[in-house]
Amino acid sequence: MSFEFAEIARHAAADRSITSEEVLALRGAGWADGRMTREEAEIVFATQHAIENPSREWSDFFVEAIQNFVLNGSDPLGFASAEEANWLIGQVELDGKVCSMTELELLTRIIERAHNVPETLKTFVLGVLEREVLEGVGPTRCGGELSDSHVTEAECRILRRVIFGQASDRPAAVSRREAEVMFRIKNAVAAQENVPEFQRLFVQSVGNYLMGFAHSNGQISHERMLELEAFVADNKASIGRFMGNMAKSAPNAFGVVFGKKDEGPSRSEQVAAEAEVNGIEQAWLDQQIAASGEVDAYDEALLGFIAEETGVA
Image 1 (tube, helix red, strand yellow):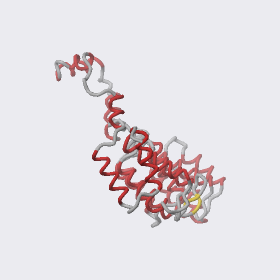
Image 2: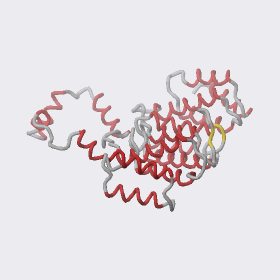
Image 3: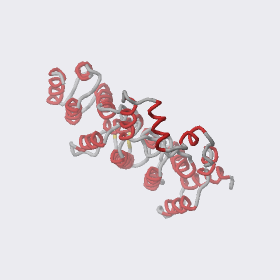
Image 4: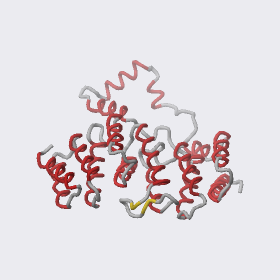
């Protein structure tokens, strides 16, 4: 870390404000080697906690800098390790506040863009998101506002980005846990003047969980990616050695790889099977709807969507 970086940050923290020129100087000093160190990241977080009215320039820098450290601070790039995830959670909670709007954008961006993150971080982000949608107030960094009385358009955008994010529970799909978050939010605000987009998002997300197909290998873990990168980097690794080991460990390996294909269901058959609401899913849906004590307009829209998609309408 350069002396200039530390001095600029300390000066901003003391003033409880930071100018556009200082942000520009931090960018130059902090990314001189292309990566953000932990010491620099902790200084950035301390500055974020000290600033009273962060500017758009500072918020952009903060999100980019911490995202860079969490996802690219160590190999493999694009992943957050358990240590990095725990560090991030600790930093967000350090000032005793639930979460600032800038920090909410940071958490959203990481789930949206990471290849994968540890379960602890997924759980933390979902909890923060649910709490902020139901209780948060004030302007968001990406435009719009949070409301503690109804669901706004900005809140819908954030919900969609996290639930369908690349590092969410099911990338490009919705998990049971995420669907239950949507039900709890819906139950809390069903009688309020929510934006129309919220009903669409509720139906799409819960419908996706019940009827959407998600490949079981849609994500790879941080640990597995390290193993794969180590294998590729091994100078001794070769196709010949790989094939030789295969032949020794499984005499019929070549027949398995190049011969007759597995008789398991095809991708189209798997998709068709997932599109059916099974008994377990139906019981779950009944339980979620019953939790509010009534079938509201959101439930009716969801049930109508399911009936239409399954051909029983």
